[in-house]
Length: 292
Length: 269
Image 1 (cartoon, chains in turn green, yellow):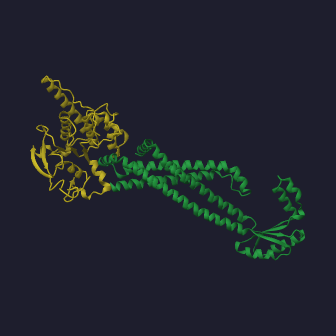
Image 2 (tube, chains in turn yellow, cyan):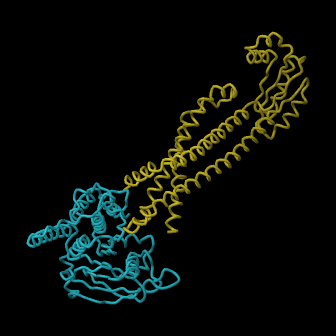
Image 3 (cartoon, chains in turn red, orange):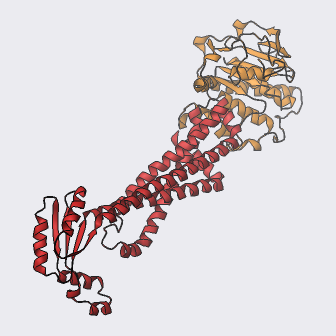
């Protein structure tokens, strides 16, 4: 019975190729956008987590402060109960980092020596609530020039992530709704074109499910096709952009995207595709049969 | 029964049909014959009164269960109602597939039914490639596909010439003689002297019993001796063959050269 309905569904697709293509392409756009937003949302979470695990406060000393005084300040701040870890960056360490960052620019390397670079302390608190106190205590240390509060960066990033998520959900929902409506309109048109045949089938004893099944299967085929095409477009785009993104993201461990994650995304997308395709066709068929 | 404001399509119509009867419903166009057929398959519901099938009030049948009723009533339409995009065998198979029959059963049944309506070797043709009489025979085969208890033929000869129409009537008589209750509406005159029947006349939605040939008892089939689906088909085939032979013999005796009715391929769809 199922094979018969599946063949019917494929026959219907073959007989109206442009309508079918329009439905698949609209759904493909929705899926492409949805996949991109899912990847962006998960990616932004990874970036956020990366920044949260970095030292939350960096305290820079004035250039004339000696390494001994920096070590004293480290011991002093280490004693605080809310401090999780303290890393001391000496003038020499700072120079090494500077050299590594600018190894391709010999001119910049010539101009800089360890003396002009500040030593610093990179401090992580046990919890985020202690950060203001930590900032206050660091500022009170002798020889401190500047305290850079990493929280501002993570807060901004968190806000961006939240906005991205809300905007993404709204946009994808809107696209999904448009796709569902388009699928319903198209199924209704197809049902209308087969009105006579449906009437005859009803008269010779076809149940409602018998009539609806080919349309539901046809919708599911559109959903699956769109989910796969959208996924392919997304994956190809990611692979194409990976070299550029790697330079942009630096140390953030986001790329390359795991193939396992991409296949999980495809699996989820296919299930959503089948659901969207089947339900929009079901609603359209239901509406027609109810009206009839 | 009415279709809205205005005159009733059927008014004060009351009759019952016993199993195995052949009911002839005569009436002009617009008399209400098709409405009667539509009431029987619950395509429409009466404004008042009841329609019962096998002791069951049709108004109590839910829309979701309506298909079960329709599988028990074979319907033949004046406009055939075959699906143009399907071949002859696919059209018949559709009725069987709808009823949930398996592939082997469907194939066997199609073969038997096409033999019965004398359309062997035409299973791969489309309705547009057949003549009106042939299409109507396919329509009969489809109506008989699930061995219905009742066959309603609504103007089955309406689009056919007299000779082809007579051939269709012969098939319906044979089907009836094997136990299937047949209701046939027509506005034409056919020879029923050789077959028991009851005749109703519909005029402006009113029904009158005008004629009855032989008792109901004689038309009833002993339930215990009722043939099976396959036996029915075989017997109909035998009867068809016999009728054909008889026809040929009489034709030869009359020294008249009469060929199997052939018509132009139907243009009506």
